[in-house]
Image (cartoon, rainbow, N blue to C red; front, side, top):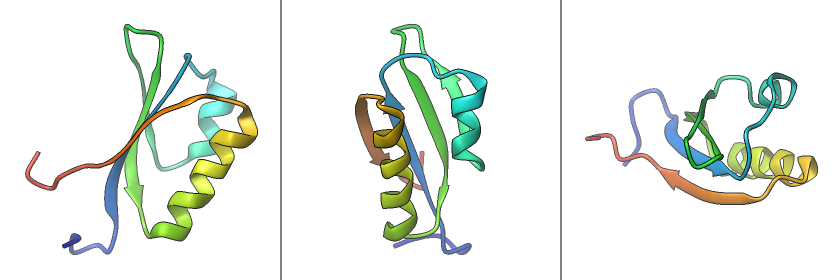
Length: 75
């Protein structure tokens, strides 16, 4: 499991379109604004501690979390 860089790619979806200031809280992640009104972040996460830190930032922003998924390397 895992990739050679030691990081896994995660997809995180949140309710609402985040403004640029909020997106900056997630440096290293690419933000996409979906037609359903949600924001999707995709990017590398080093380990579970980093993932939990990122999820804490989402909680602190008061944004509803919709999805957290580790992206399969084959997709």
